[in-house]
Length: 91
Figure (cartoon, rainbow, N blue to C red):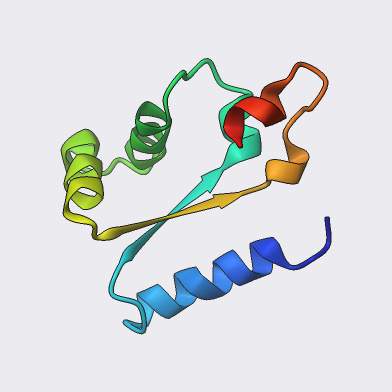
């Protein structure tokens, strides 16, 4: 904790928005994922786009991932509950 991981991910995201990185960043909170009933990362990411009322989110996310245009940024692994073995699952 406190090493600047989240700040770095924000920097990467801003750089991508400025066109300095040619990928589309997809921020993924592993802590948030670990508290859902999702068993796969794809539905979790799609749900994040659905919350923003993104048109055809599943089709878009699959396109980004298959084409290599996505930059999936994983954050908050140190905040995942270790008691139930969840940290081992997400890492």
